[in-house]
Amino acid sequence: MLAPVRRAGIRQFVRSITTKPDLSKPELLKTQSYVNGQWVNAKSGATFTVDNPATSEPIGTVPEMSVEELQEAISAAKEAFKDFRKVSNRERSNMLRRWSQLLAENQEDLAKILTVENGKPLAEARGEIGSCIANFDWFAEEAPRIYGDTIPSWNTSNRMHTIKQPVGVCGIITPWNFPASMISRKVGAAIAAGCTTVIKPAGATPYSALAMAELAEKAGIPKGVVNVLTASENVKAFGKEICENPLISKVTFTGSTGVGKVLMSQAATGMKKVSFELGGNAPFIVFNDADVDAAVTGAVASKFRGSGQTCICANRFYVHESVYDEFAQKLTEKVNAMKVGNGLENGVNQGPLTNPESVDKVHRHVSDALDKGGKLLTGGKKLTDVGKNFYAPTVVANVDSSMAVTCEETFGPLAALIKFSTEDEVIELANRAEVGLAGYFYSKDVSRINRVSEALEVGMVGVNTGLITEAALPFGGVKQSGFGREGSKYGLDDYLSIKTIVTSI
Ligand code: ADP
Image (cartoon, rainbow, N blue to C red; front, top):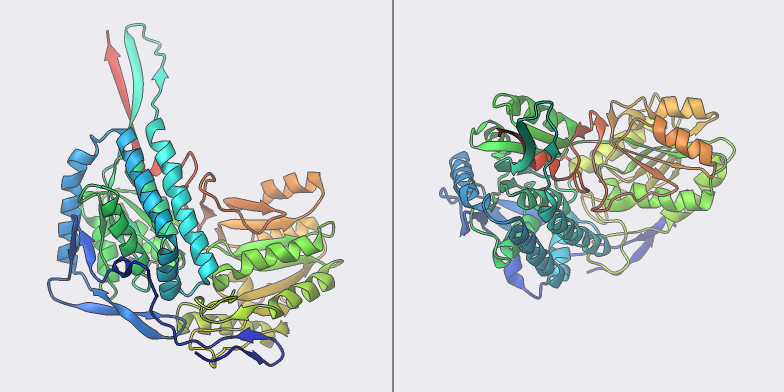
């Protein structure tokens, strides 16, 4: 490992050669898929390599499962559903609690696995495992409260009520930016509802999913209820099979809007229940009456978590002309103090991006903005000395609507600052996006807070905060950010069907 160095007077960065996690329980780093309670290789013997994005060196290999093996897993999940749907709500709740406890006991190992495959700093990875624990606890609490209704009839000889039943086998496809928590939000709800699952984690980050499956087994979750199949080359064929296989009743996907549209059209062939949590392009508005220091803190939290690779990251910073210079200067100072490097290193708060294509996309957005009159305040370059996947945290001022960064999600560490004058103007600009996942604004004016919260076309609003997720809150978007809500008292709805029962007495 090389010593930390200062570069270009900007910020510290660290080049590191630590690729594999140093675990107290090495058996948590699984190298097989988990199907019907068995750890299996692909029958073909095929594998694919998973790299650590910080070092671009291999962590190891996992099986390249085939579509036939996926079909077998789906059949096993269907078989398991016959018994699992009859397990009492309280017992399913207990299973989730045991799973949550095992996550808590192994939090440090799980965080290290997450950091080596995803790149995020260890502190963030610990937080992500914490959110998995919270999700499982939440759904453990929800499982015994799946109530129906008693409904009065106009016909005095009828008695009417509803019950909620599990939909069946759920196909779960998750992305690499939250390799553990995206699974916990979906599988936690599915188990609480009484469904069984077939999970396809992102090829770039399969290890967190496999480690969670190992703990599911230890938690006593019956075989066939949680299946995790790894695939990289076969990812499109897997998506199609999950969407079209008649034994699957519901498909849930978190990822890009483009892939979501493909999956939705495939799922239409069997009229499956679907929920999608897709891309965002979050506006972050700083009004003239904002606490600018608080806004800068919120901006850093929202923009640079996961090196800008979260779907609720602020992407467009609209700053009122009267506080624009102050905000730009204070944000740049905070960004300059960031430490970039391998997320396993102490003090690193900016890890790598997931792959060189992600780095190229950020650079394309920066170059496009600068070509069209943007002003670089800091960053703006690939950090090839640190590794192939690193990009300097960047602030660009003088951004306007002609630039790609305002209409496409950057998914990287670029804060783009746009000056505005009036509330009406900024609402119109904020709502121009085709997507609508999260939005943020800073203001102390209570009337404005209500007005703007209601006017923003997004599923989630942060007012005077850049951090808006917790298990108790409904998470999801509007417009092309998808539909369905995860977490919260609504999080089970997508995994349940309402049955109406009319009894004539
Ligand atoms: P991102 O752009 O954030 O990488 P993607 O939507 O491409 O997001 O990927 C999210 C998840 O979707 C990953 O698990 C990936 O393997 C999977 N995926 C990508 N393309 C397809 C597809 N055509 N069908 C099914 N799953 C897909």
